[in-house]
Image 1 (cartoon, rainbow, N blue to C red):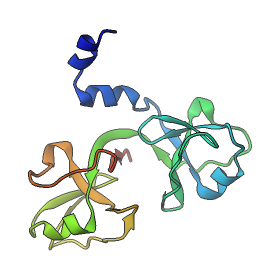
Image 2 (cartoon, helix red, strand yellow; image 1 turned 90 degrees about the vertical axis):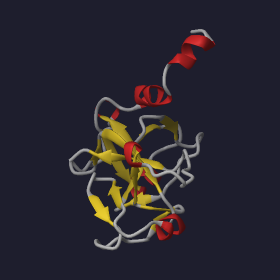
Image 3 (spheres, rainbow, N blue to C red; image 1 turned 180 degrees about the vertical axis):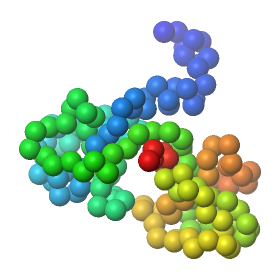
Image 4 (spheres, rainbow, N blue to C red; image 1 turned 45 degrees about the horizontal axis):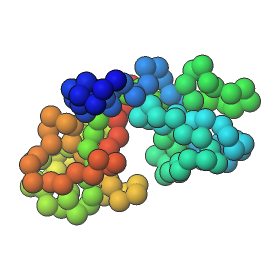
Length: 159
């Protein structure tokens, strides 16, 4: 494919093509530690990483890391939780506690389950994973004036 043709595809569509078409069965940190090096895992963005070769962040949400297996790649011997699956829908641009504190009351944020929270009205935890809280903005709701980190996004989990 020529560079001209490649550049005609909008970045959102390029990213969409990497996203998993099926559910990803997430694993716990304990399950991850029991896997041998060389095992290929899929992250919640649909990208493949190899344990022992690629960098795999081990931050957990609940007890699960953001990596797992597609249905066809699920290894035998691991007990998977039906409720710990991930199917990509929309991207959320996460924010830091400092960015949150700069927002006005009444600003609506979205969590990874697609639930809306309103600053100044709803309880919002400022606990972080990495540097980011578990809330942010959908692409269509991103306010001007906030610098977003391309790597600090998550997907809305499909219920």
